[in-house]
Length: 121
Image 1 (cartoon, rainbow, N blue to C red):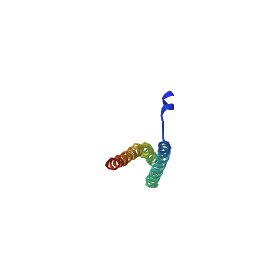
Image 2: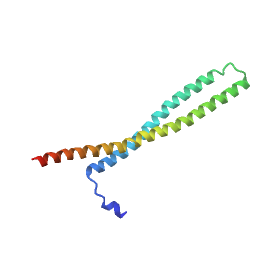
Image 3: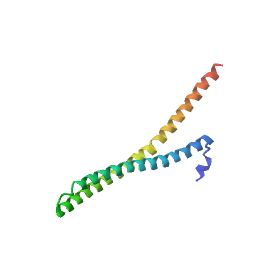
Image 4: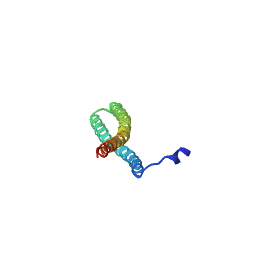
């Protein structure tokens, strides 16, 4: 823990770290929830449509068809959860290093241009 005490962060860097944490949590949760809401609506509509096609079947065929509809819904749900997790991780994590890199690039360019004007004077 000795090395952490020696790190000097400016107020802007501390704000950036907090903003990065808020972004990661907020964007991750929002993306996951919205993806799952969309997926659940689609899976539910497909399951209802599948069940509606079974109404006129005899009891044995209806049970087999109902089990098939449930299996399709379960498989779709597993895929939706996997995709939602991946999407949430990408949306939450990818922009953070890009934003930090862009910020430091802009700061570098501003200081570089500023140094050029001070030397010319």
